[in-house]
Every structure is written in structure tokens, then in C-alpha cells.
Image (cartoon, rainbow, N blue to C red; front, side):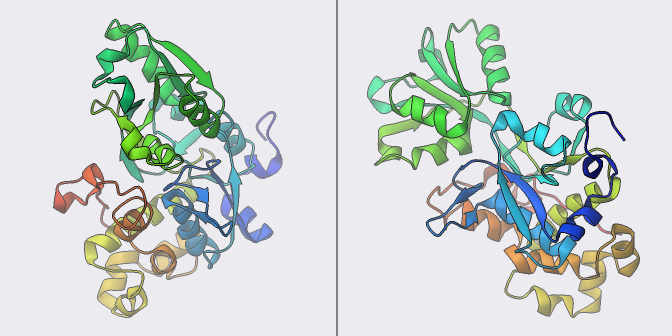
Length: 326
């Protein structure tokens, strides 16, 4: 057993542990609209929360077998490494430094983003260059904190970072006037803007992007089978959109043997993953295909109204691409 880790985090059988307790413990944000946040009824919603449900449906047979664990950015990797959560689905950027030093692995990319800056429209700032000598709010323990320092140094931009401990608190600091700008992933800024009245009219997200921010689900690096299952749940949601399979008609499509074989690779693959056949269909039936998830949580059907951009399918000029199952 790895030093300092409880047995349930070190023995490398995450699926068996989740089955034994009857629930998947999924680490999410403390509340970022469109990604993971509680709605008015107390239900977790957002594309990250939906991905947790898809994994639960595939692994445990039911999408509602999820315990959502809200985490600050600074606490997300310790929670994963020590077994507090089985899966991290929390708008987390895939980097080499994280995989090589934190004993974690990313299962894929759920959302392509980039770091941006938000300012009050009243201050007249139109570009990042206008932030010289300004105070900039940024969340502790995020890649945004590192990118702000790197970009400022490279562009001889003198800024004073105000580092705040959580997403909620950093937004509060910005909207209360403690900072001239707020820097984070562009989607997170758009979500934060929903918190204030007439947010899109009062606050502008500057057009420049200073980083690549590929967000993806994260697991510990001690369980290859679990990593493979989580990765292919993500690919299955993308593949379903490619094939025109929706939440409403997934069961009908899967009754076609040819579709089922192309989509899930058969009983041998299911056995190797440790799950019951039909796991990919269960994932799609629980939350819909990738496009449905995007539209409902982030796109045209959501308050955010974000363009799909790079998150379009590869056949539509985007980067979303599912490898073949055979």
C-alpha cells in the first residue's frame, strides 16, 4: 500500500469499491453553472455532473447511483488521490505536470476552453494590454494562476494578482470591485456573469485567450481498468452523436446487432472492463449523446448560450473525435 493512502485508495479496484458501497463518489465544483452546480431543487446539473451520471450508469447500472462531492480547486487532487472521490469531473485542465507529479491520469477531453479576462464595461478596457498595473482576481490552485504569471512576464504586463480560495469567493471579490479584472477559463467567466443582474450587458469577456484549457475527467493512476472504462464512456457519448444516436432512441438503435457491435465491441470487451453488456447504451440513455449534453448545459438550450466552437464534432470543424471500438 502506498504510504499515507487508505487501503480503498491504494488497492487499485475502484469499480469494486464503488459497487460495494452502491454509489460512485464524483468530485465536482462548488458551483459553476453549466458544469456542476445545484439547481433550485437541489439537484446537481451541468455537463460535468452529467458525465458522472453516465459513468454511474455504465459502471453501476443506474445513473442516480452518484454521490456528488463539491471540491475547491485546491482540494480536488488530494481528494482524488486519497480516495475521497473515485472520479474527478470538475472543469479540470489536462496538463503534463499534473499527470507526472500528482499520480493521476486524465481520461480524455470533455470540453475545450481557453483562459480569458472579464472586466466591467464601464471601465472602457478593450484588450488585455489595458490591464497594465491593474489588480486581477484569480482562483487559488488553478492553472489560471500559473498562466497569469507566465503571460504577464512574457508580455511585460504589470498586474497585481489577488488570489482567492474558491470559485465563489473569487467571483464575489470581482463583482464587489476588489479587482479590475477576473481571469479564468472563458466558460467559467460566462457562468460567473450569470450571478449578477444584466451580467452580459454590464461585464465583457475580452476577446484574447492566453492558454489552451482542455478539461477532462480525472482518475488515480493505480487502476488501468477504471481509467479505460471512464475514457470509453466519454468516447461513447461522442460516438453516439457521430452516429445520430440520442437519449430517446438509444435502446432502439442498440437492438440492431450491427450498431451494437460497432458501438460497444461486444461481451468480451464488457467482461474485460468488468461491467455488464450494454454499458455504452446505458450511458447514452442516462444523459444523451455529447451534443445533447452540450446543448442542455452550455449551449443554445442553456442560460449560458455558448457556441460549440472547438467542441463541435470533427466532421463539423471541431475537435471532438471518438476512436473506433475495434
